[in-house]
Amino acid sequence: MELRHLQHFVAVAEDRHFTRAAERLMVSQSGLSASIRALERDLRAPLFVRSTRRVTLTEAGRALLIEAERILTQVRAAHEAVAAVQGVVRGTLSLGAEQCVAGVHVAGLLAAFRRRHPEVEIRLRQEGGLVLADDVAAGRLDLAFAYRTRADSDHLRSVPLAAEPMTLLCHPDHPLASAGPTLALQDLTEEFFVDFHPGWGPRRATDATFTSAGVPRTVSLEVNDVHSLLDLVEEDLGIAAVPRHFRHKRSSLHAIPLADTGDAVYETVALLPPPQATSPAARALMKLLERGRQ
Image (cartoon, rainbow, N blue to C red; front, side, top):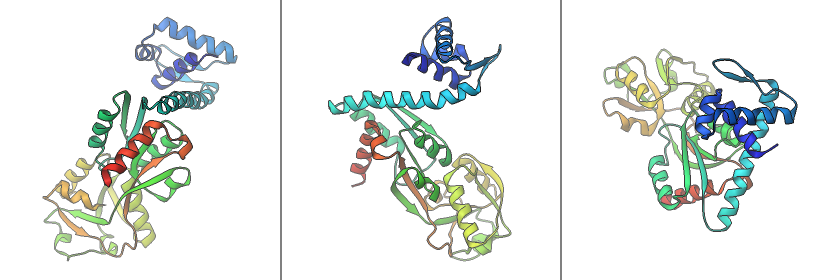
C-alpha cells in the first residue's frame, strides 16, 4: 500500500466522482482509476460502487476512509513537526469557525498569520459548532472557534475567548419593546422565536437555558446565518435571544437584557485537540491570538 494510493482514495471518497477528484489532484483519470484498482487488489476488497454519474463507498471503503484520513493526518503532522523544529511553520492550517464569534476577529487574525507564516496554506470553513467539534476531534480540522457547550469539553481542549449575557432582540413596535428595562424568560412563553439551526452553538446555549429554567419556547423560523436572523426580526416575524454583541449589528432593532438566566452566558472558545496532537500551525495561530489579546 502506497501513500499516494490513500491520497487518491480519500480524494475520490470526498468528491464521489473520479473526474472531479482527478482534476483536483491534477492527475489523469486513467491514472487515478489505476491507483484505486491497485489499492483494491492490495486490500482484496472493492472500495467503491461505480455508476455512470457518481461513486459511493462500500462498507470496506467506509472503514478504510476513517483509517486513511487518520494516516494522512499523521503524515502531514510529521512533516510539519520536522519543519517546526527547523524554525519554519509550513504545511496547512485547517480552521473552522462559527459566525460572529466574540473574542476573535477571524479575518484579521488570519491576515496577520499569513504575513508571519507565508508558507502555510490556510483553509477556512464556516459551520455549526457540533460539526466543528467533531471535525477537530477527528483530526479533519486543526482548531475551531465556536460557542461552547458542556459536551464540547468531553474530548477536546478549549481555550476561553469571551463570555456574554443573553440579550433579546425585537422590532421597536413589538409589545415587548415597551415592557420594561429587562425581561424574564417566563415573559416569553407566548412568543415566536427566530433562531439558528440546532447544530449552531448559540441555539444550543439558548435551548439549554430555557430548558434549565423550565420555560417552553416556540422556534418557528430557523436560519443558518446571522444576517437572515436579524432580517426576520426586523420584519417583526419573531424575536431572538442572542449574544449581547449581536445588538450592534442592527441598530434598528430594540435590545432588552434578559434577567433570571442564572449564570447562563454565551461562551466562545477555541477548540483544539490534546497538546500532543496540536499541529505547529495551530500552535502558531493561538500564540498570535494570545499576543493580540494581551
